[in-house]
Image (cartoon, rainbow, N blue to C red; front, side):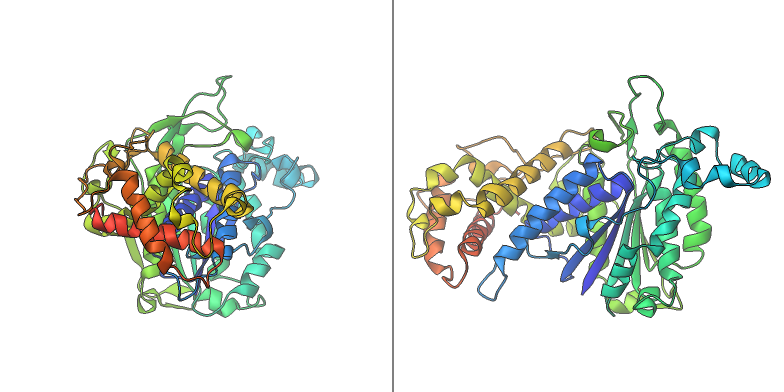
Length: 480
């Protein structure tokens, strides 16, 4: 079973990145394959390009592991597929083009020009679209209406199978997300029946999360913001009223998730492009958990008929504590159970690679029948892709820990005299062994290595060995 995740705008890209991070750690999602599809006219946005880069590294590692019955490993286990080249649905005629040129304003007669002036300001009409719609859903609703006629949308329809699901991620307070979400949903539920698998898509299980305001933007250097964060709340209210009548009122979604925050960070102003690189935020991680939740739902709950959900479900996220610094104990049990153990295991894996691997390479675990030698550690799997994932994952944690509403469950600094004390709020248990800290880590590696199947590739054996080691250490030290 596949779940197609349509990620609209910058928020969509950041939520997809959070989901990929969670899947990297082994968070369980009841689906065989995730298929991301980005809808964003701003191809150069750093939020988007950073996510795509991470997906490529993840995809490479997943393909090299060749998961078999000989493996217990959960890291990188869920397949992430690139259905569309670059994962991104291309929008035509948006590059190097102003909105009035896109709508061919000059060719309109006087009456239609007058109508256009009623619907769009002079600033709207003169807006270039290289970096998106700059918080203007009225522009996005015109431009994004083209994607249902695109080749990429046809490829999506052609690959869709009975039982596959769809999830849509968007913000409600900008331009691309607020306009793209209802348009996409309309085109899915009202799909042209000439498309391949149109009937399966029309009645598919469709979920969505709409992300309400959770940050502000600082003033631009020239003091002339094209995107004004003081309007985020009013835009969200207007969009919610529309959603109530035209999405909830029509039973268009099987599951509709809402999330927001009332503690705002102020991010540096960027109109888009390479400078749009917002810090990762806990809201994006929790929004990604909505996709995990949706994939776990039974088919019986998510039934549709004639393009209508039979029993729509609406959800919001709640935490046990309303703290500015959130750790695992800040969440209710179901969330802790989903994320604490896998994130703890992968964080310990990353800390070992950063802090001790070079010292540990003289240990006997590297010198078995299938040794981990310089060829492996200097090869593309380890030195390029795995290293990039490790560095990006740790950076993602650091970014979330630097917001006002920060998610900071780990001590990420080096603690060689208290290696297993890195989980905040958790006192490590005692293990009956005269070794401690990274000496204990080495002992577990050497004990487990001979038990790892030699049928696995060197890459798969390395990840399997490290996974089993951190899994046992987290269990024995009672870290989750």
